Image 1 (cartoon, rainbow, N blue to C red):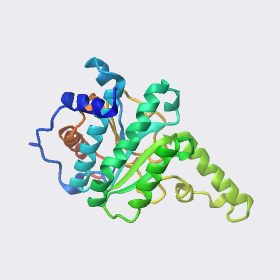
Image 2 (tube, one colour):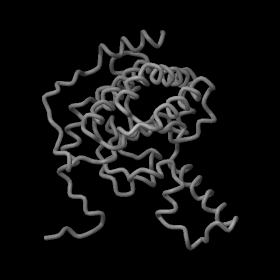
Image 3 (cartoon, one colour):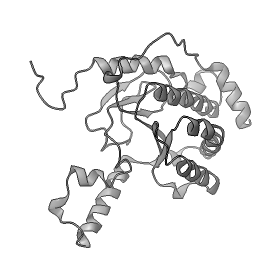
Length: 261
């Protein structure tokens, strides 16, 4: 089945947004939202579709959520698109994912540019095929000066490996005499992560009902509010996001402190 046929089939099954809900006030919205986009395969299986159709439908959901985050003036949106462990999936599924990456950036880059979205890739691109790697590099380079929503896309990414990468970089600086071990702090460590210019994650949303972090942004989510949505990612839409934003707005974030009376 061609990617275009898969995408058309997936669109028929996706839930439509009612667009009758409003987000919470701007001051109660998170500045940085991270998404673990889970449930594509189970969504497809439930509808007797191939797993590839689930990934195609997930791309449609991503398009809608990016637009919503831009509309709601969210500063940073980080998505877990492909982990270091995902290479262990069946070869045909990985191949479909690679094709969808290329298709997505070719079809969406103009709209992302128009909205001022800045793309940054988190992870090691060296393992990707040339076509996908070039598409990712081009998208990142083309949007680097944009001032709107910052879109972090984690590809071939693992949270533990990111921490090791940062630790190695700091160790090398100590060996070279550029800094002392006592100079290592939360701030200096953060500067060696992929998200060095970003605020930490305020809200982490994982779809499909699974309740784990799966090695995603372990450093950056240290005090994030977490919502485990039961909705499969292909059915996650603007309305679902607004519901989760209201849940976030209702929470009391104390960061380990006692609430003032």
